[in-house]
Length: 315
Figure 1 (cartoon, rainbow, N blue to C red):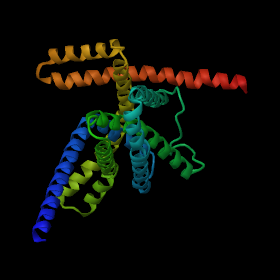
Figure 2: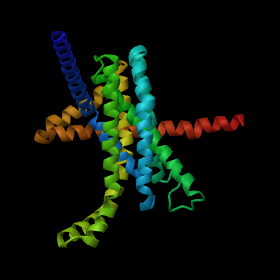
Figure 3: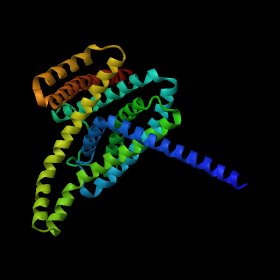
Figure 4: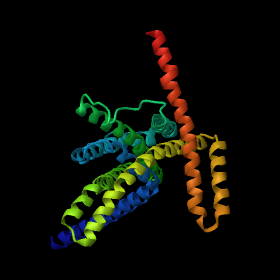
């Protein structure tokens, strides 16, 4: 009997070691998959602050929390099951769906550019006469969650590509870990960014000489930083959207546009010497953003002119 118990405990120990090794493998795979999506994560963090720039300080964190919850729903409830089902049964559909999402990002970014240039009305701000502040907030959160859905889809698709060879259950766990970790990281960083001015104000009130100087610096810098983030967020929509479309066309066998963009990128890399990597990336991002702007303007024209005219004619 003791020998049987010892053998059973040995078996349990072997199973436990195997489970621990599997968890280590899943953790390593999740870290690798998440790192591959770093570029889109940065874009996500740049886009989000633009959705809270028009609000009073007391509403900033609640709005970010609402957007973060929407982002988790996007990743875990909508995208995770969809990604797993598509990867199992319709892997060919992933690229076209991502391209549609990329076009939506291009449209959103182009709308913001046209609004700045006076050519489109993209929505109210708190400087306008707001008749229903709660509804205005709801619309902003809804818009942020819609944009997050596209960025999250790209993140999950990149992560899925990295673990395509894993069993279904492992893929599910890895994608869930990536989704949770990236959401916490992105929206934690966004919360810190948008509250930096409040931190600066607190430092000027309670800190010593060095802390007060830092606080004044933060207070002076934050309006510039928030304005810059708003512009970066708009650019990010277009360069990510344009990049998704370029990559999708390449995946579908239309290599010309992506090949041309990469050719210009490589030419800049070779010509720039030690700065080649950074300048090459910036070149490709700029070309993607330009393509995204053009595509976004085309989509906006179709939505606001062609479809509107058709609806009006039928009405």
